[in-house]
Image 1 (cartoon, rainbow, N blue to C red):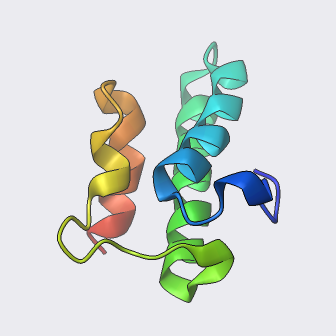
Image 2: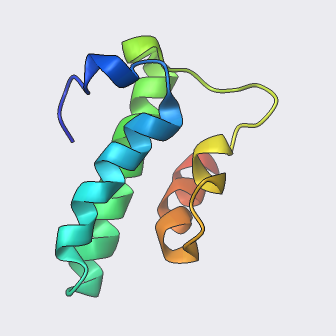
Length: 85
């Protein structure tokens, strides 16, 4: 994931997450590397949100918003784990 993310998507946690997760699709053939990549993608975005970087923050009405846009459960789980800590 680029740091900083594309300035056009600053403030949009779902778009920033989508950008990071999209890069993980290159590692799909290796399940462990794929899951590690997804975890890193979500962790990076959640850290940005926690620190208020790039106009990102948590939606107090829906803390799991960045997880819900993902239809694929495998892609959601790393985010849910990180947010649950």
